Image (cartoon, rainbow, N blue to C red; front, top):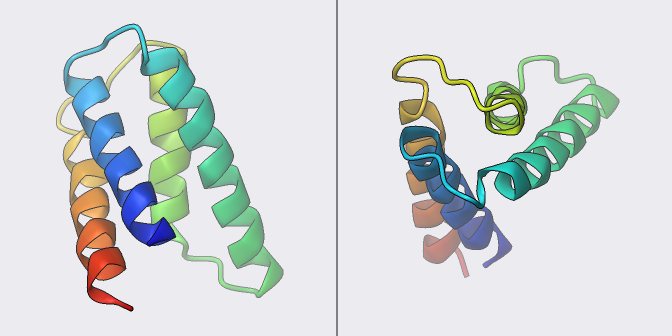
Length: 91
């Protein structure tokens, strides 16, 4: 269930990258923390290709500093949809 909530958060980040709003800064902080924890956790187990954590890290920086790479919003949206489906499918 927590994976589904985090997937929904990724979808909100993708929407905020397309349409910046008043929540963009706070979502940026939250997703930046999520990305940092993901990368630290993957490095701790010697897994150096945590692309999902790096997507969170880049999206968090973009939301914090209010800039956007064209079409980057697709990556958090795909990651969010994937996490939502996996999170709701596993019991």
